[in-house]
Amino acid sequence: MAADTVKEFTDANFEAEVLKSDKPVLVDFWAEWCAPCRMLAPTIDQVAGEFDGKAVVGKLDTDANRNVPVKYGISAIPTVILFKNGEVVKKFIGLTSKDDLASALSEAAG
Image 1 (cartoon, one colour):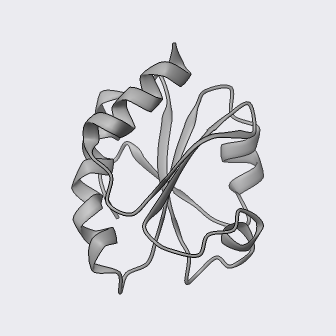
Image 2: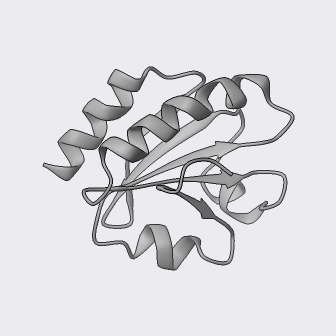
């Protein structure tokens, strides 16, 4: 797993950790076999470090957890979704720059 600041989300903890969080939550939907997902991982780590305490950043393995990806219509990975107050506020599909993710988190953490 990635940096200490990156949480691991699952079907079992998604509601408690993401939907009921009092902070904005950035969720990286990924899979081990996905090369672009692995390329995005260092960016997710950096964003998690920068926003530690202000937002929650984590990953959800789409192979190990099927329910949440289906619920949110994840059809391509990597997909990164920003949640605030249990609602989707922004969705990024494919490789996304650190600046784009940080900007969205800053706005949500405002």
